Length: 103
Picture 1: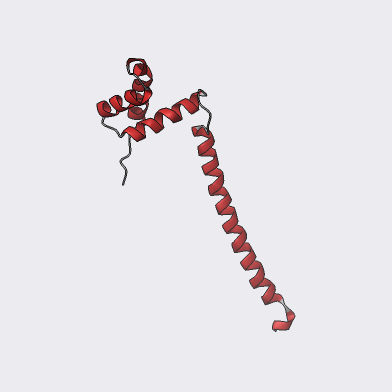
Picture 2: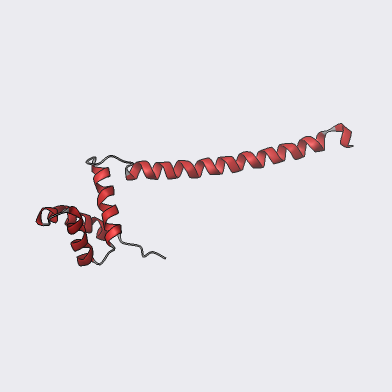
């Protein structure tokens, strides 16, 4: 199971990459150095930096807020579909109970 990284530590790592990126030959080298320094995975830190760039508007993509809203809407949609399925089953059951041919 992946370890959960504190939001403050995540923000600090992203800030370090952004502040010190000019000191390295590439963004990848900066991410690798900071990842070793703060003891997180290189790929995780790379994704955090990309998401921070998306959230800032410097990179195109789905922002964190939009992603959270999409997740919430999908969950609501799933619940509503389940409700409709239950209501359909209840309607079928009660329609059969009220049918005079079944008496």
